[in-house]
Length: 106
Image 1: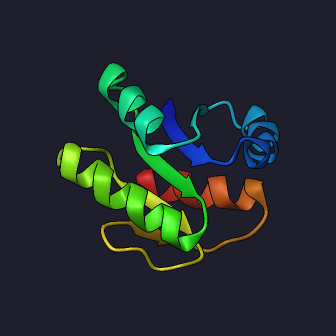
Image 2 (image 1 turned 60 degrees about the horizontal axis):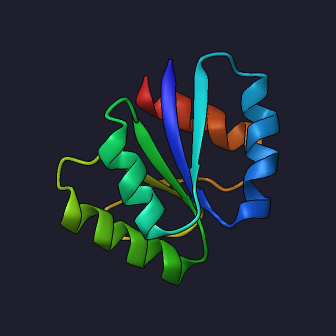
């Protein structure tokens, strides 16, 4: 089982949840801001990756804070753009995005 913390605006996560429901090897957790993301990371050491689905500026800020607060954080991923301290995934349909993430973690 791969556990992914998705940090995104509330409405954007719905499509990922639907795609993840067809992938029994993935569990998706959610956060909508840096405070909730840090709380989830502190409370759940089973998180294998953090996926930032935000605009470039927000993703950059959250990546900076997470890496500053938790240098041993799981790998951080973004879709599409380059963000320091993260791994880049090609943007696309939610199912393709999750498959890319799953492949990279395996």
